[in-house]
Image (cartoon, rainbow, N blue to C red; front, side, top):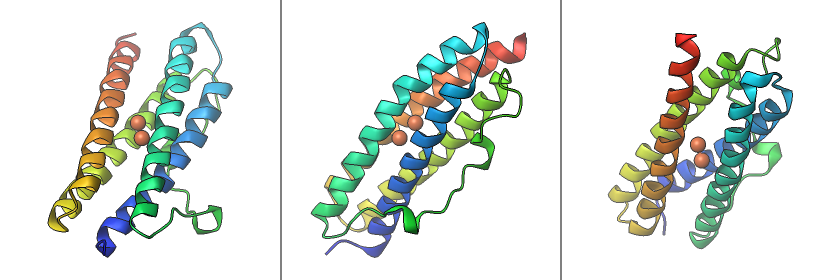
Length: 151
Ligand SMILES: [Fe+2]
Ligand SMILES: [Fe+2]
């Protein structure tokens, strides 16, 4: 039997991934301008990865005799990732992405600890793999942030 904490964190992570997909997609569409092109492309690539994370988390929940949440159980949390009023405000989106990635990193770290404590190496391994993807996303957007701040 999986620990409640592992299941709770898997469900939280699943919902966060889905919210991330929604906001990355929206921002990839909303942003305007030559300077936004690279960010939009990067967001499009990440959308596929985040969707893949959600799928893996959902499958793991199923293996643990649990299930991922549907929209009725969903609570939106990504305030800083809402599409900016000014559609050329690329930096606002970059900062929102960094918040989302930091939040994901914290969740996967918690999941790694919880899975280790519950003696659930399969979930732990999944969380480590996804954590490394999120750290790569953060590094990429930190690079964008540096560039935009220096302009
Ligand atoms: Fe993700
Ligand atoms: Fe990510």
